Image: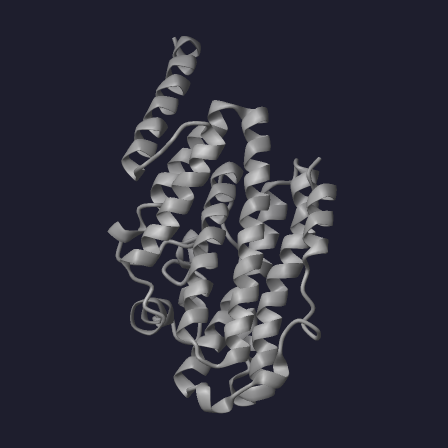
Length: 285
């Protein structure tokens, strides 16, 4: 069971909203209305950890260890939303999200293969870590720079925790887990080839609600994410390369073989899929 150890390690580095955020360093001359609006959107987006947790608990009912870890992940992700809202409450109270705006991103996700979902959220944590680091550099107001740095570090730790559960899955499920992780790894590391950023909050998750079935589509400004990345914090090809390299590095650790490119990871995916097909063939005959 991983939960007791993960709880202890995350507890040791947990930050306090009162003690560790330098509220007294706020400089209103360095915060624009445009920047404040992006903070509101990120606060609402972080609130979507609520439906994500409900999905995880439903789809992993047979894994009490992982579901117990959700208590830590959910707490810390909701805290991200809360600290961003606290920033707005103190310095831009007119922009604090309403309860209706927050509740609008709580909707049911369709069931999905748990191993693929785990990998998708692992990659999502890597991407968020880099998005928030980039956002911290874009902002000039000291307090929000610090907040984005702090929550980016949380996202990195969450990614590390997910990786621990992925390693556990390899022991329990073998090539089935390898196939799921490689499949989603190829998808999430190929974001530069798509029109939209690949992150769990921007993927369609409820067929009955399509096309209003992504977290981003349910924000007050559904076009916000692309504008934030492309025109505001300027998450460019150099930043994207950091995300891809990090995914490939962790896949190399997970599968114990190097991956210099997404193409190499895709070849590995086909190799594992071939093994699974060969194993299934005698049963189908």
